[in-house]
Length: 548
Image (cartoon, rainbow, N blue to C red; front, side, top):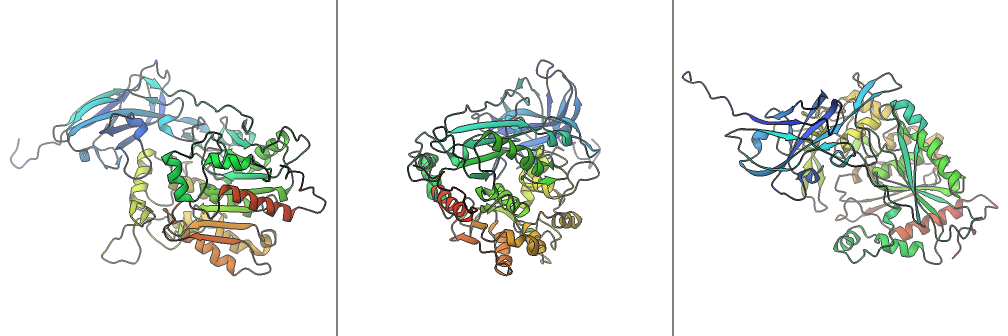
């Protein structure tokens, strides 16, 4: 070796392939390696999307043939460790996965490769048809180097759809609008919770609560006929959120002197997330139109629902909180009120802690000359920072290129933002540097996705239809700083006149985090029933659905 020359760094490499018996055709998608110091559950089940998760490394593959190897090496980006060299020497369990993409020739002229949801809610580590390897125990030493081969011999099986019961029904339909947009079959679904006495009162039509939230096949509001209230998990959730367990809600739902309604949750996963946010967007397609013109009419013809605005109300938390408010604001003549809980940012002046219109960078607090103060993304209710905007952005970059992480920051870009020249969502900020693209921010506001800005611009037009219909709850220590945007909305609505909004805001005391709401599920239903009764047109028989 010449004097002064440095030895080449050792090779750190995983070679990942799949046999034709697992997948006969070439695959375009994303390959991953998970590294864990725990054998159980298997590493692919230890993939976490927030905080301190098992190390994950990912890379795109393009028409990878059976038997051909994809490589994850020292240059591959990872999370939480940024590179394989950051994995200390030791014994680990490793497992490889493949997220399989489908080519979509969209009706807007763009051709993209995306993972089409298989009714698992865009969870690549359990999505039917995706491949994975056996977990292997190996010794990794970045100083000595390694070259390991992993074979994707296993295929994730289809999702098991829960059976219908006397209380709960499941619906799944192919959407003509969405199928046309994506050029592939796209499905919408709903889970319907029936009231007590639905079958024994065949002449009664009922009001409907549309409860919004992330993809799931469980009954609305956690409804269960199993008594799980004694479990430690149920006790903890009850103490944290001040809400009854699903079994206690079932007892109220089936009791006497309780309003009889239907509760519906939607399933509308997109290629970019487990949920479309229930609105039209140039990246996701016309999900809002599909829900209002295909899914709800289907439900109203297959269940005895009152097909009038006064009998349709909305609720939801987090993602579902944003959706419930957006649906009410966009369609005030279709829905008659929203009870919105801890919503995703409803003012983009507080896109969590970032003002996307004024700040130049999402990773750092503005205004410092010498100090770079990292922007948090998530905290505990006591204020301990758990994750930063920078870390979450890197995680999304590891999970997928071109906005295909199926995670939180990138679905906001897919829903609210423009299409990039490559046909994928145009990023709001650079995932590695945090630099904000203000043209994307302006697009989001100008196209009505900043709900506070939308209300300010349109109050004279839609305000008269929203009086008494907006109700928002959020904890003052929301774990994702979502309370800040709620303050923005409240500040504006306080100023409204001709008409005044006449709604309500409730803020949990400073130790209340994400998930807090001011009322139990039982009380929420009673409040909604009173609201529906009050707003019903003359001669509507609101007593019919209040039987014991």
